[in-house]
Length: 471
Image 1 (tube, rainbow, N blue to C red):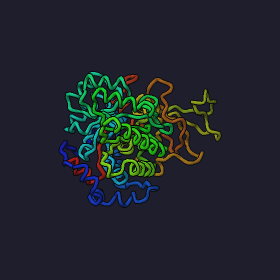
Image 2 (image 1 turned 45 degrees about the horizontal axis):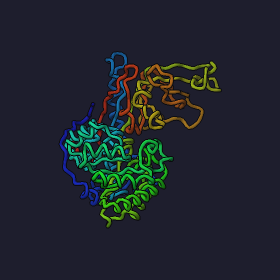
Image 3 (image 1 turned 90 degrees about the horizontal axis):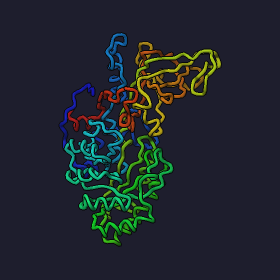
Image 4 (image 1 turned 180 degrees about the vertical axis):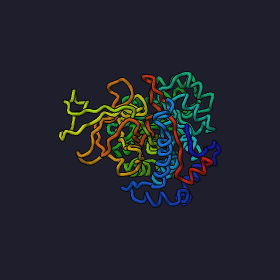
């Protein structure tokens, strides 16, 4: 991994509760950025300083590559990650959901520097496997800041977390309860309930969650097994779009809290899961959730509130750069099928561009996460065009039409079906894709022998994050 400025592993300790309550401190840490730019929920202004840092890192990398004589791998795809964006997202979370402690979903993006910053910010971590738990513990995170949020756990993993002192975990069925009773009876358990996730990008209720018809029986069995059930968890689906899903899930969780009290359980925590996006829908979603929590789990109730955001923190912090490795001209010939473009009606050529990343690599989010990454021009005609009008897709039919394809031999490996630019792109040019931090690198493969290990260049656009990272 490449860093333009040395990043050490030294961190400043930051108590989460103090941080959450000190709004003056939060605003001053960003030199007024949050207060200035997030005063209105319907605005998503560009942070010019952050864009400049990202652009400089991209430019320095691509302009220093000699495409005629470079070594194999020098032209590989790479990321630029702005840790300052992660920091701003944390402040945004605390301004909108001050009572809810985030437990970052490691599966979304297990980038080490990202995890180190979140560790310093005092978040918890949602882990779903032994490897994720090992990675977080290796950063010096206390086991109490980890929730093993996997309702169906491997037996050997249960023995491992018991030895490591990771006590918090979820369950949603009777067989899992019996397994936990045998292997880790002192665990702190969260009953994961079923939710309506029909409006989410990735539905989870098909696989996980106990219906309200079964929760009473599960609580009775947990009492019979003398297990320590401490709360309820739910997940409205990854990339949720309907705020009402949170309202119903909180209301259902309150019902389960009442059921638990009848069995003598003293529930202390509600885990509202993930589903939060990093775009301008967050404030509306958070507002509905905040109101629901105030109604059913008010501050005076003493209930701890946690959540499991993933893409919310990671998505907008990572920009991906890809090199055009080949080009095929489609000119004055009929299309063989709908997937291959023909000449424009005005007779001009269109092109198939092949880049060094695709669906089996960092664009796995297209298939697994229902994303639609938008290409922009990074470098063409000897010029770096990042964050300029010339980098953007044209809004009319006058531009040159392209389809964009990955490097593998699989015909489904297509990133973009059709996009138009004013510039004629050729082999050696570069494209970039923003918002590529969620469910991308983590699910990349080695299919066809292509590497899934790509450089990350780190920049940091926030003084507060620099201080925590020891920059």
